[in-house]
Amino acid sequence: MSPNQDSLQQALQHGDLELKGQFMLGSNYTFLVEVTHEEKKYPAVYKPSRGEQPLWDFPEQSLAQRETAAYLVSEALGFHIVPFTALRADGPYGAGSIQQFIEHDPGYHYFNFSDDDVQLLKPVALFDLLVNNADRKGGHVFFENGTHKLFAIDHGVCFHEEEKLRTVLWDFGGQTIPDDLLARLSSFIAPPFADFDLPRQLEPYLSPDEIAALISRADTILKHRVFPLQPSDRRAVPWPPL
Image 1 (cartoon, helix red, strand yellow):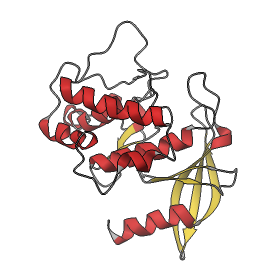
Image 2 (cartoon, one colour; image 1 turned 180 degrees about the horizontal axis):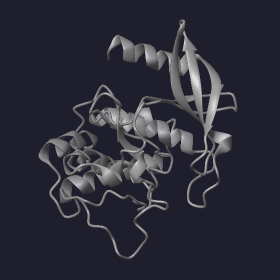
Image 3 (cartoon, one colour; image 1 turned 45 degrees about the vertical axis):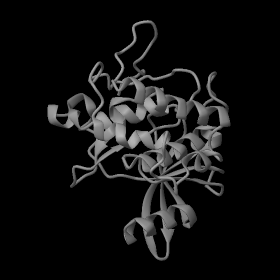
């Protein structure tokens, strides 16, 4: 971890939060905050648990925990596509998730990506399949300004035990998953990241059954080794898609 990244993580976990604005799109309350720590300031996204709209198929006030779990899975895989995310008990509106804010162009997203950039989304498609993402919209994947570093956000409705995959990223259906991505995924079966101990890391955020389902999905993916086709017997694309 670079010194700058370590400072950012310390800030988001322990710094003072000041509300700067509200993101109006989306069904849950989401705020832009400024985090001050050791005389440095960092922009971040704060999602208070009490601002979550109840869902019939997910436990109430569990989305912030799922956001944090998604970050941990991304890091364990070595994908590094989810911005740093943690839980804070002392937010302006109570407990919730706090996530690094990534400067990006909201006008450049999945629906107008170049063909080459779409091909870079295979790790995201595999990640979504693994975490059972029920809400991968086109605006949830983007590149950081001034770089070609890919990020993916909004993982509050992931990790359900039942199949819930809803995504706009069906481009790779039927294609073989690249070997280098499968090698990373095998960490869930025979961990090369043993010192990370992902299942134990996830215990504060997911139920034992959800963790077991996650590991089971990893096993299934490694057996089939193919990106799934879009199913026709259920709604498999989120609304709105952007």
